[in-house]
Length: 149
Ligand SMILES: [Zn+2]
Image (spheres, protein in one colour):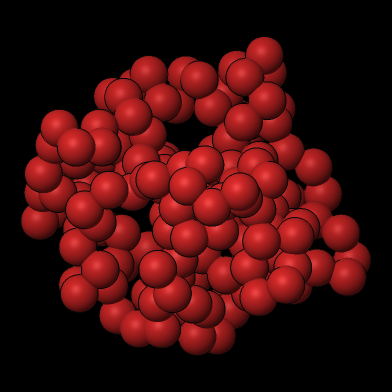
């Protein structure tokens, strides 16, 4: 079952970017929240600390993860991106190797289909700057470039 918080990706919008997030809570609670119509938020994937990957929407749909945001002058960031939520409580948890490996594999699979998509953080694209800080302490050195964070 897909999240109700999605809509068809507009015809003009090609996937050009991957945006990484922290859930701020457990894997199960994040999925529950992102699947709840009342939340009005979503992402394409949630990756657990153990490395499990849950897909919540097809890539042909836009998910609602970036909020007010901008990337290279484009303010419709959700329309051009894939959103990946990582089970992580900012400032209170480490980044398990299994989780990082699962995220890196997912990025690799997406790039195999869509080309060398840059990877960025919610903190980098959120507007006004400082509105979001996630994912805090993400081990960017382990994420193959290009990254913009
Ligand atoms: Zn976020």
